[in-house]
Image: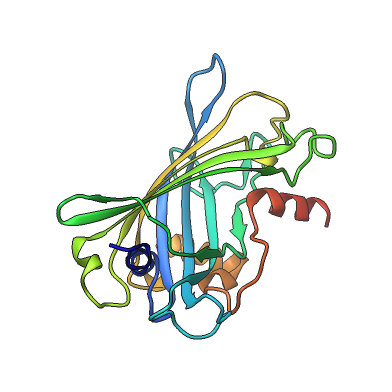
Length: 252
């Protein structure tokens, strides 16, 4: 199968070629690690991503049937939970919790040999994304919130789709996913130069519609940032992250 054919199959798994909005919901936990300390489950974690796919070069208009490349227009929100009660946290160790409000969280998709695994009645698409770039939070400016002038993280995604995703003509297919992320301490945790960091371990699925997001989560989004119930209307950049969001709030 050519890279273009593989990308089309992945695009149907991640979103929908007809340009309709697609919602993913996930849940899991956030673990801490540090030298000479036991691993600790610090938080539960729950999130949503609402996206739509367009052909690359069309901006925010139209679907993506027949395209060689795509733009994924998306917003994502995620919330830190009490690890036991699973209630959405407002504070942690007397610090205000900053939840994830990434707008945009866009992605360009071009043909490449996406790693796939044949699991019989399913196919798994694997994306392994090591990140290393100048930190939005230089240590000299944010000594309590940053331990390094280079931001380093590892994002590991797996998307599972029916095996016939490679042969049918449906614009989108049902899918489940897993996500693991290794990252530094979050800026709002105020861990400074303390060695260690966090591991996020989550799993989720493509929902039939946004209305299938759990009631509590939809209510929280509606009360704080109702625009996150929909994908962006048009492409914009750069993407928002927890680090850029923290810096923007710190400067306001």
